[in-house]
Image (cartoon, helix red, strand yellow):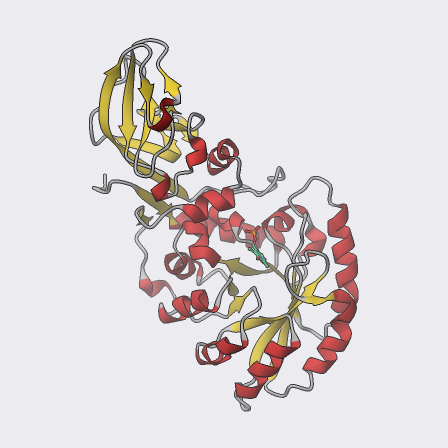
Length: 368
Ligand SMILES: *Cc1c(COP(=O)(O)O)cnc(C)c1O
């Protein structure tokens, strides 16, 4: 057992197997989305692990792309969102593949890109998500205009689906229909659309490559579970204090919990300062000795309090599982997200810097 106050254990083998399962299921190229520090799993170790499997990586920002390059990642790195004209030099220097969603940025990039080796770009087409990209009705003239920029090479075309994780897939069809004229005239460019939900549930969106994030980490974005994926993250903390409180006593700020009878309680060293959601106050559960125990009263910045049963054998320093398995019990990211009134994505990406990330197996650098 590690000696950290709170830590996550990232199962890199599971991430690699999930990626391989996705590739087998789709038979397409894999653009592995490792933005936001690989959804809290660690971008560099995850990308290192996936280097033999992924055809391309995708990140949200130039900074995230540079981090991967500095760590020795050599595969293409796509930046999913529009970059700023001030970032064009870094994009060229670090050989990143930007998304093009407007003319001004394309022009700025063309100004400084190399003549001998044009900068590869992917054009982002807005088909209804309405948060980035060139409007689908203007895609053809925009692509023609891009061809006048000699130092850019359009390597790929993509769009992003707004409702692939919903049961009703009718707007997915609308978006694919808007995208289809662009695909028809693509001249061999790499076309990609599918996020995790579409990778699992919308085969007609697979085109040349799929672009999942959440699936890689073993989590399903929707009810469809056509392939087995293994969750890769376990989150642990420790017991810091125990006591027996009297009937009528309250617990934590605001004393929102009141003991109905004499009750054993334990403080767990985890709080919203670690990214454990405050909205789990009075509704979260943790695993202690392989059994579920409820979070009582308010989650504080650094600690939370759980209710024990009289027969529970606990000592200070004992391990508590917040997400993952302990004995026969399991708390999933989805359960935590539901109890906290949010989605798995937010729980994972909010895990804080005080939480030490550990890896199994240890990352080896000679894999790629
Ligand atoms: C985040 C993101 C993805 C991956 O989404 P998941 O639901 O995690 O698979 C794919 N494409 C774009 C444009 C994104 O922003």
